[in-house]
Length: 168
Image 1 (tube, helix red, strand yellow):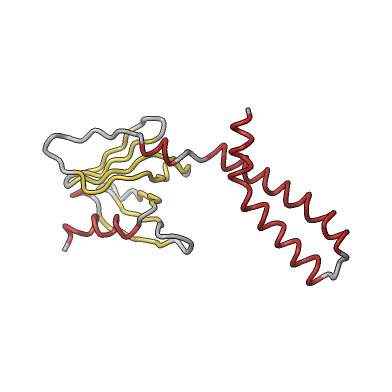
Image 2: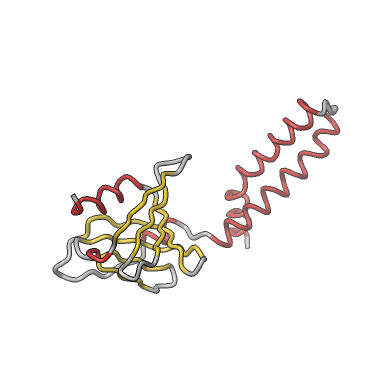
């Protein structure tokens, strides 16, 4: 129980700070509230924001350490080009897991150990979307049935380089 509370606080702390700063801007700068009243309003809002966002993140995200430990089995003749934790959109739900690109296939294994495999030669129409806040982002591609596959990764440039390497 103590570990869960620490996770909630650490996951939501930054959101609490943002909520406090937003209240500061609205209360002090725009509405010209006195400091005492400002603190009475902004501290509960910041604490609620911290707890709510922390609880959501703790419940619905998986630790990178857990995702990195997922083992993806490749064939003996395959060479792994890149492998990392990722999120995959499956039936309008984002599922955390590990993504692996070999010279022949793209493999995704969810944190629940469900595995998805696509032949690399059948993947086409690749589009890459960078994130504004870090080096990560999303990429989409289509399989042979023209079904759109979406993945979110941390090092988007590495994945783009590896995926487009053989197409040139």
